[in-house]
Length: 98
Picture 1 (spheres, rainbow, N blue to C red):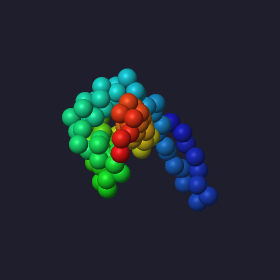
Picture 2: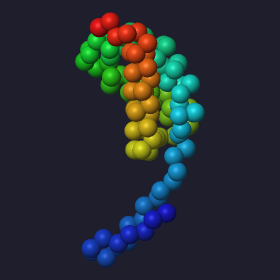
Picture 3: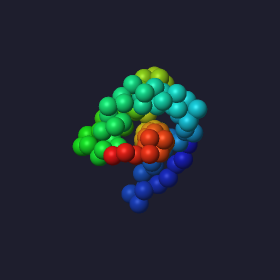
Picture 4: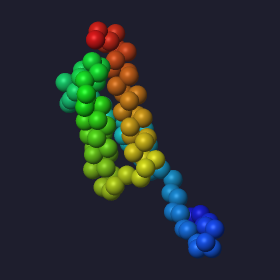
């Protein structure tokens, strides 16, 4: 836990926890998401509006459901980053025909 003081003199308590969401936890979930939403993955590769937002939202939902709680900001960013990595892997393997 970190404690800091604002210029008003009030204490601000910031809870900092290590990330409990890791690649080892989320990778199987994201692999299933990519496999189960091939139409959206193709849409993402084609640059279709909404494809990335759908996949990013589904990724956060899948991980949140798996861990049984809301994700922190850094955890969401990790999920989005890892989802993007998975999509780039698929894109590279398909030689991106779009």
